[in-house]
View (cartoon, rainbow, N blue to C red):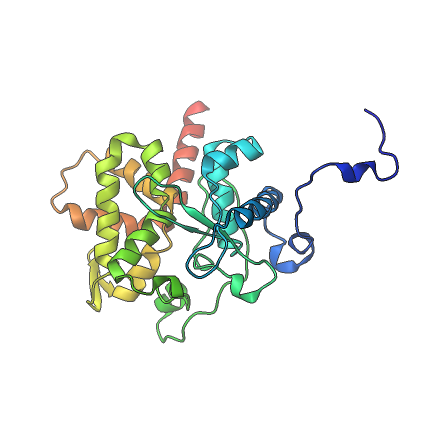
Length: 287
């Protein structure tokens, strides 16, 4: 390879990654791969501007699918999904599902604006592959008297945004869960579980759309607001865990709705423990 001479280095095209992603404390725990992907998405923005890809609020959007991420970074499905989810957690992108087999719209958020915090900022960032959760300052909780509310409730309401104008609560919930649970990915990874995946989405929507104050979950009456808050923190990994447990359960289930509700409610707290227990069991058998 030859050296660069004079201004020769300026003859090439480059992806630009904002220095703020490396220098500001709030982005310190954002992975380098996610920062690289953000630079690639920013680059794609210029093409969208040229093509006039603006929504009704004059916001620029791009179309960048999981397959596009895989090609750009030469990574697998799970890694591409993890990186997009990571950018969502940090409020750097927002994906809007369109349904009918159409790719989601991706809004690349302004990293320098306080308003760039996305609706997913308060969701727990889980990855079943053993990676550590991306650390971030937790958002302030609503002032509640109960300890349970202190841990489950957050100030962020994804259905009070301007985008939700004119949409029914149920439609908003369907869009939210379809995106947050990455239904398209789940259907590719678990094609035999297509029916139950759609049933789970319907169950989550029905539960979160209810006007009841208390919901009966796992043999106990819990505040509906707390239940909905936990359900809205679920991701694709949790659904795959629930599907796995359902497939391994050989006992008759008398009340399928209550079984699924309990499984979904407990998934965030039991998934990692279950996988760790299975790992310990496998290691013990090898000795």
